[in-house]
Amino acid sequence: MKTNRFLTIVAALVLLFTSCNNKDEHMLTVINPDGTCSREISFHPHRKSVMSPLNEPIDDGGLDFGTDWQRSWSVIGDSVRHSCPMTEAQWDSLQQAFPKQNVSSKILIHASRNYQNVREMNDSLTRTVRHQFKATATLDKHFKWFYTDYVYHETFAITDIEKLFPVSLDRFVSADTASYWFTGQPNLAEDLTGAEQKELLDEIESNISHWFNACTFTSICSIIAHYYDKVQNPPVTREQFLTNCDSIITSLAVRSLDLFSDMNQVKKILNDYYHSDAYSAILSDSTMYWDKKLEKQYNQYDFLMKMVPTLDYQMPGKVIDAGDGKIEGDVVHYRFSGDRLIPHPYEVAITSRSTNVWAYVVTLLVILLAVGSFVYKRKK
Image 1 (spheres, rainbow, N blue to C red):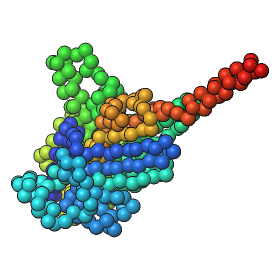
Image 2 (tube, helix red, strand yellow):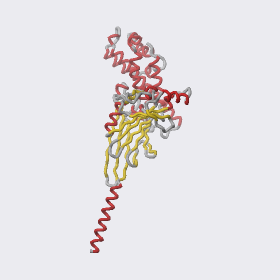
Image 3 (cartoon, rainbow, N blue to C red):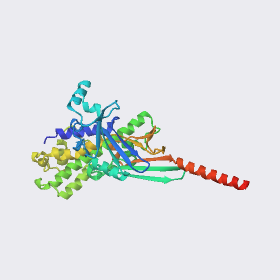
Image 4 (spheres, rainbow, N blue to C red):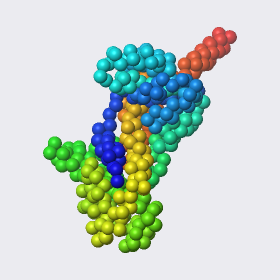
């Protein structure tokens, strides 16, 4: 079985689990006082995408943009926006400006849309990311005469986490530990020395790696079970095979599984467990196209892990509560990455306050009229 492509994907994912960072890509969401909104997604594009005509949809790294999205491009560090599509001459000019470098890493494409409400906006985002995760948002207005509060909540959650990660993470780490590893909260390393922090992180990393190996092993077992009629003289029934696989994933053998190496280790685990090589044939069967079967699932992982835009929000009035975000001028920044969705949904919560100037004017006029009426009656 050829596994080079599969192993390349797994290797990339292992790195992505621990080193996702891209300060250039971002998603700007603007909430207007009347409830309308807009969203702009900026990312490093493939050459084909930035050169595609505006009357054609684009598919770039798992992001699908229809013709209802407006598109432009810019060079990183330059605020000037250029109209899409980029020309061959512009691409060649950039290649000369950045010799021996990837032009895509030096530019951003900006896709933007306006919406009537936040529900429409989030339904659009869910389609754009191919339903890998679902975006849900609410906007509440609280009128308080002199001012109006705007409360915005947005939640991002993996659409079908059981399908993407077939083994529950809580079998290997606690909920708090999983949240700490993928989001940084709660801070389990607080008050620990450097040596103690390293010991803690090493233990968590080992358990997270075991979980990821368990997900991979379970996916392989599920494929075998689907084609169980191809297994010659299986030692157990299909149902018992799946039950046994669920037990095997907690073993030291799966914990020590090195997917940088080759898939022969999977064969050995099954052979040792059953004292039989009944499953070796199907794992070696070239007509099974194992690479493609496994790659389909790992491409979903790949897309999720590479999704690392900073989430920027602009609200009506002045932000008075940014939740876990950071305020910089009139923008709230939320640090986001796809792996933060693994332990639990990702939450955005922002409250802003807009002063109702007219309310002050009306109140002042009422006071003046009352005073004037009082004075008039006294004189009379």
